[in-house]
Image (spheres, one colour):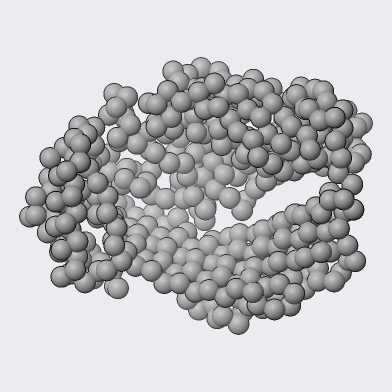
Length: 438
């Protein structure tokens, strides 16, 4: 479907909904392509390609709200679909807080290319994708007698979205992604340690295509001999890939839904110091080639660069139009973009060298956080660190505490952000964390 055809269809669907009894309407036309190749034991295990087109219709009818989605985009079928959706919406309970955003807050255009789409996406042939998956597997296939299994994969996707609302918003967004992944399990005696590694990029020519399998194997081999150690307080070093597990509850506590439901341990904390001065974080939607970059959010609100934490002081919440009305505040946005941390001057190896007694956490196993209190408990995998050296692998240990206390105890931030994610988390060090084991 051409851009002109999409705009024409969206305008027609919106007008048909208004003519059929809707008070306001939001239309989203989405198109996506994806492919995936999994290889195992030198054979193709999975080969998938998918192309999808769909329309989502947001309806505001007599103070009632509903969302409907269909992939049948022929006008005759769409007309009936919209009419039935409106009829069904009228049976719902009224919700006076549901509305489209204030038009003054919409993105107004002035195109800025954030380079989120690889224009060569459609030129990549299937043979290359298969070869890349096998290349990842071949890096480690039968390279060590302790290997039990290896799975390698290549995947890519491209998505485009056209948004339109009956109160004046029109906009388009698109992105692409390419990734390679390897998972390796090894014979570790009584246990079978496994590890994975992935590389991801928006542009195919920027995708790191070597050492994916090798890295996964080396990480798995290092876990052989894992055991519990004595319970106690240790400094906790957290590898950049694992930091999101600890950071996610902090971001969830800033969400409008959590605040309105009183399921946030950071209610009424704007402008207050809630974390260590080592925590400075910016939400930057305008990052070139950023995995979370966008000019407007899922409602059409114009994107803004926001200082989330400034030396531990909370600077903003993430609140969409609906929860802003419930909370009687101005909306910001209901979603994060690229989370960029102010970095320190040491990488993970250097942070390890500076640790007298600690545990380097490279993975979390289960556990949970209480959103309203911040109390948490997680199982961990990692390594014991003594006098600046990794001593042995550790497993079957748990950490527990409170998120507010944990982030106040942040002692160091690394200079190694994870560029394979929109949350560009660096490695971190937390002081005096409770570990329980044997």
